[in-house]
Length: 152
Image 1 (cartoon, rainbow, N blue to C red):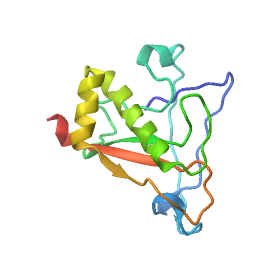
Image 2: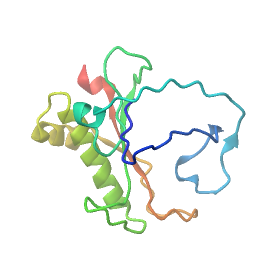
Image 3: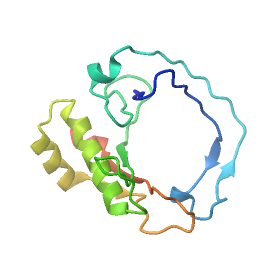
């Protein structure tokens, strides 16, 4: 998994493990908490954002490497414009950003932007794009998915 870093000296942290949680936290306290340990190995790759074309969102390396994401490839977006303007509860914009992230991802692995666009038009599943939420999320997330079997 590759995470872009935009701030010199940035840190990485994990926490708040959940056994289960619904999309969007619509009940505000609907997660089932759990204890746990997280074992992580991190390598800082100097110039990795340019080398791997990671500019905005995290990506997973495809292929026969662990962990295996065998059923779906997922992409996320938030309601922030390409110019950095935050829009209040704009799930359409969040979905658009998720689709743009999917196109960026697919073009890294040999698809033209047009091919990626056509593939998304026929195989993309829109998930977790709340039109509203009882939890006051200023920038709602949106997730879209492609079945891995699409590429076999």
